[in-house]
Length: 187
Length: 187
Image (cartoon, rainbow over the protein chains, first blue to last red):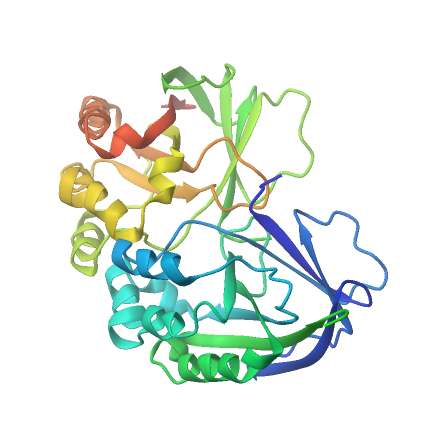
């Protein structure tokens, strides 16, 4: 098994209660009451599972060394005890995005859309882990799954972050996005 | 199933006879007499299968638009009737490679190692298809599988191509490489 693989299981079990699920663009996902985040593959799909999404963490695709160093100096890992709010945001980008070369995608991602610079403003309040789905062996409905967590007091800041990204040129290539907000048990 | 997935099956069947298998660096693969190239996944592993390697074609990772246009003007697809020789070259790069940021990897790949410029010299004689394995859900023994085909008269040129790449700075990050040469039935 790939140790970088994570499975996100929407259904009726798991430590995260689904507070809200919104289809930002494209088709929604079926409603789920709870989310479980599993390290590795889930072989046997439980009867109560509504959907399963899989993704792998991977190497940096766009950030430069200078940008990565800025992020590394501020960012924190998922799972702080105070981070009782989370968001899982699955995204699929268009065929037009994937047909672009590396320099063209980088130009949209940062030179035009300031993806890294915008994200930096919300560190360390918002922790983030990016999972890639596009190059899994099975066809997947999304290209990326991003998991964020933050304290309740930072929920408004997180709303600002996603709003800032959604008006960028980069987001004109997003053809499906679902925004799933989560509250941890006891949080 | 992901329509970009290919499975390379080493064993006793398939249209390609294995002429030579050489471990260039790192562990060899077990000897196989023939190779079958399957579009998609292979669910049931046959008793005579010696190894199976899987990979997906994907978006460009390093080439710029200018470089891609130069390649597109000269390159041809695999499968020309005259291309009765082939090579399957599985490669794994080191953790140090994958820890580098995009700008650092690009600098080694092209600014220092001239990977695209070297490859361009051998177009259209050598056709090439790159498959990625690193972000598949299962742990795979290699990061990339590259399949090349060419006419018998271009076999020496192909040897020159791989020799030129193997002395580059980029190849100092290659920790496993197996070179499998193939001859098509009737070729």
